[in-house]
Picture 1: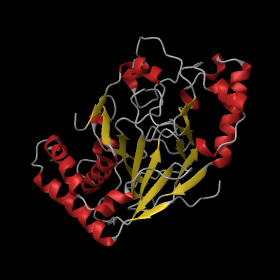
Picture 2 (picture 1 turned 90 degrees about the vertical axis):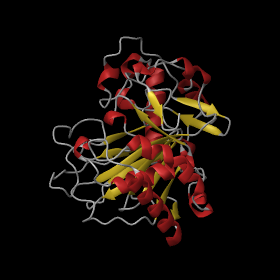
Picture 3 (picture 1 turned 30 degrees about the vertical axis):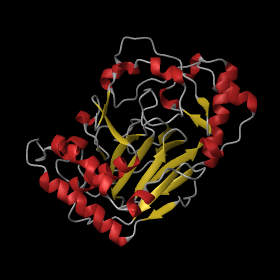
Picture 4 (picture 1 turned 135 degrees about the vertical axis):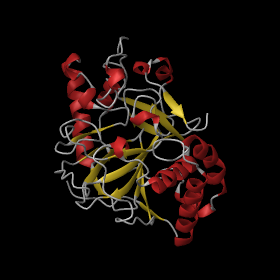
Length: 333
């Protein structure tokens, strides 16, 4: 897959200074309480006012996705490779490492919408550490490395999934690519779109949600495609969709969608300081395989999930889904 050039929104140096200074001030105001030495609840309570006070330059960079690719990269935030310390071997061991960038991501996410977290993932944190972890190399989760992370909608199993996925790069010495493909760029005939717009199969919880996988309720069938007011959207996760339960015609249409997504897929190799913003209603994302060294120099991303209030991009029927018992937490509820 060739490495495509994603749309880039360059932060002006004065906007970078403003953003990082605001993040540092928020960190300084958060007294030590939790294991990582920060009172995150106090810090998060201050984020909306700080985000609202950021300049028009920052708000303009965070404007909605405006191309069929369904994504963009914010560029210009400096990262000191030595100062951030070694890449953690597991998200739970990150502590305060890279905490400044957690807050930067929270500020950008708050300008774009409302950050969300999950009770059942990374202890309910609003910013996740995405690092390769020993023993998880072959999973279909962000902790894997040696396998292709299949293209998917983030948290596709849940009706409360994010509208935007925000990935901040701290380290990527090996230029490991994130893959992305937009449903707005595929070519499907009307029959396939109609077939995939019917709720035929469920999407099951992924390996990051242990409790959800043991949920006793019936798995709801969901549509793969939906025609929103501004165009086609999708909900797609083949690794966790029991395709063998569908008809031959449905599987064939699903395969054609998969092939089209592969055809239009781009590979985005993030540089330290890059922030990739993906419209989770339009774009499936994944990651190419790589060999993890576990020596402190592996790829290290920060991840935030964002909801956009009052966005009309999903079928009303999703509101009746149980979400396998998983609860999404809004940062400012």
